[in-house]
Amino acid sequence: MLVAFVLVVCTAILLWRDPIARRLGIVDLPDRDRKLHARPTPLVGGPVFIVAYLACVATIYFRMDDQEQALYAITAIVLPHAMLGLIDDRLRLPTDARLLFSVSLTAAALLADRSLVIRTVYFSFGGDLGLVPIRLQSHFAFFLTLMLIVGTVYSVNLIDGKNGVLGVYFLSTTLFAGIWLHGGNGSLLLAAIAAILLFLVWNLRGLVFAGDSGAYLVGALVASTILLIHREQATAMTFPIELIGLVVFVPAVDAARMLARRLMRAQNPFAGDSDHFHHLLWRRFGPVGGLLAFGATVAVPLAAAVVFPRHAWAALLVAAVLYGSLVLVCHRHDLRTVST
Image (cartoon, helix red, strand yellow):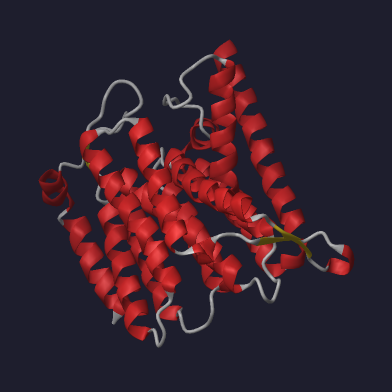
């Protein structure tokens, strides 16, 4: 029932994307700078994800025997970020205002329910493949969790620059999270996958974009879900901190690379450009090859970590090697192109 509802409603949004986008004022207009798509494009990926998320939350709520406070905390983080993205898609809010809202909102949600705060981290490189636990101080743990959520929201927003990138990232992390969540969530996983695949069908054809609402929702949901899994696995000590690093690795490292690059060039750290990981891949390998390379960089280390969770450190190393090698290859290609 849940999957059918998501399929019907999300398909309807995508089929009537133009009038819905005009009504909401969320149409992305091309320009001569960075927005080089051929025609005005509806930013309805966010509404698609919002509908799917709300349907899943409602299903969880009516299934709960006891009130799970983490559900409210996650929703208090995810939905306002999605709404912030919708407003930004319409009004183009200043970066500092969005960041202030995001930090304040997330801090308030974590203060209301501290169950998502990372209190103990486990490293996978312990002796005899055992995990090494490290207890965190309360204030540092709160700050670390806050920065993880806010950082993921904004770094995921930065990877949404080419068709298919955000959808592939969301699909990969959703499958990864689904493996770790408790049983009985098959319909929730299928509903999420259905919404993502529907979005990808239209997005890969350039008919819809996710917009900031979609990217913010994905970032907030990915971060919150991975924190929930870490909390649930804390007693069994089966979820090393490297797995959290793997989930956010590509967007986080690429955001850090671009920030460092802009600061070294005395540029605005929040300015847009065309040197992100996905831009490099598209110039070097084309749309199909670039998307495959991006997907492999995200999915291959995650798959390795699922099979060998006690070697998560090695999977993280694989992710670093893949990312670093591709960036180096792409930069060399750009230099040769400029020189010729």
